[in-house]
Length: 69
Image (tube, rainbow, N blue to C red):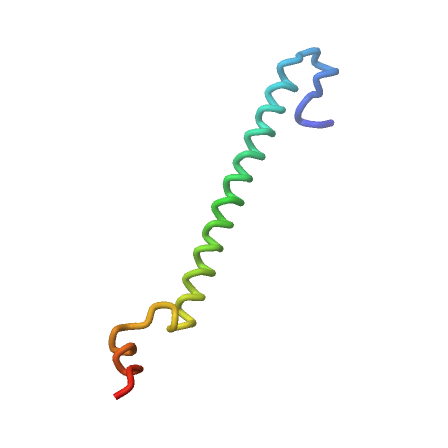
């Protein structure tokens, strides 16, 4: 026996509507979490890539050292 009665046995149509709305809100919440996780992952990849290659933002001292004497 399910702890939640089905609308067929109770005759209450608002039960199904409530759980449909609850299910939709749950899906929207999961979508927001997935979007935030994706954005964090993208930012992490960009930051780690910029730390690995120092040629992205050379310092002024490196540019002066590269000039011919």
